[in-house]
Image (tube, rainbow, N blue to C red):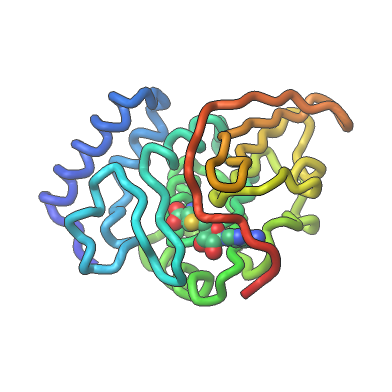
Length: 213
Ligand code: SAH
């Protein structure tokens, strides 16, 4: 698992690219600049690791586009020690970004193959999520709720109720909602029953599927 000066240089170019696209949060930019994204992809795709593109990983899934990861993370407004739930661990790249920001991360993945792979891989890189879970993200993670933030990294055909109910008051849910195309949506919990909703344009994700595989 090598991280060379060449990789570091390419990473700085990637940071410049996403900055140009409008990402301003310094902590998020630092995390993208630090995390060796090429190690989260199969070695054959090394040349693509620092392009601002999504890319195939195992089990027909994708590692999200760096800009999208940064955009969602920025909306989440993570503070150190925040308790964050991620739905869709996948390669673990987004999980690593959250760890870099000092969050206590819980992450759920429904593909066993990816869950197993990432569960071994992330600690090797020094990223220790509080817990990686093999399960169905539609249900959230009741036993660890409430969360300061919840981030969904797959396209949700609708907003799962448990995710809203597992937010702290003041907590934020960042979720791409839609079937073929998704609208990036932010919910802020104002009160037990009251949520503020904001929309941030179109994105494309692999679908949030029900149940484990
Ligand atoms: N955050 C990941 C993105 C992976 S793509 C990364 O940075 O690499 C989305 C992931 O969501 C896939 O791994 C997919 O298997 C997973 N997923 C889809 N439906 C899910 C569900 N109901 N619960 C948990 N994970 C789910």
